[in-house]
Length: 77
Image (tube, rainbow, N blue to C red):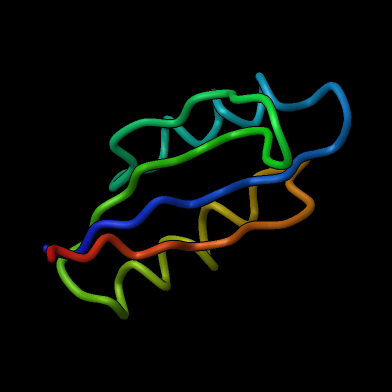
């Protein structure tokens, strides 16, 4: 299982609806609005890195209102 945090920037005033839409995507564990340089932080998981990439590109980035994402894979030290 591969997990990652996805940092999301959205259009002004759209972070709540972006977070709600992202929560509905299979593989998303949580999506919460935050303050700072990003508007929403997402925790997601998939069986492989390739599936995680597909989740981000084909589903998360397609949510209306998103302007940019940064994916940060979780590592176990």
